[in-house]
Length: 319
Image (cartoon, rainbow, N blue to C red):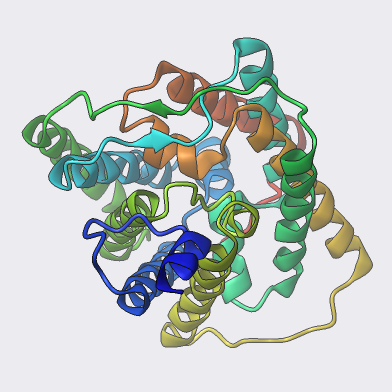
């Protein structure tokens, strides 16, 4: 019976003899910590790009680079290579996928990371973003729309010390930039580190986990995916309450629901084509030194810059 549930939960714990329930408790704690960190730092590629383009404030975008560096250090310390469960697609899929993901994030008003934070603040309309993603990923799981690619796994190319030096330099640069703005330097720094460490641990313990996919993982790792997903949202809710955000449960409005659904559907399609969303690009692809991840994330950000320059900002701060 224990073996059956172990396969069902699809755990890949460092100690194969670890009892099932402690393993689930560990996954739950990591999921909660991840959701808490996402809300704490208002982490969002759309918001970061918007601040860069419209307010000339690069600090939040630099913080996302920090997140990738923290993830690389975590993989190196845990001696576990970052792994993409589905390998990179050819450029004919990857580049359009990144553009489509960017358009979806713009329409939605937040990327996947930001949507978790907004939901924790009480904007339940962002729950429909995940329904759109879930629908696309479900269809993608039963219909072979794309060529099958073998998993991509590579050890972190730089050692712990070089990564730590680069990380320290970027943190110092962001500190200098933050002195001229009202940015909460310490809170953002803590949230970047916690996000990367909890995500990395989850990616190692439940290899097909991903936030683009905090809901999509329900398909690939059914029971563990539900547990992680619920506690990610729970962590975001608790983080907002600690920071004294009022939780205003309002009836969803059709125009917002349709916008989130369309944005989520487009992000889901983009994530299928790459494959992976901005979370996997930042915290799996970049730490492994994959040029595909660098290209996809650059295309994503440049597409957002073009949309913001043309149409203005669709993002709004979470705090």
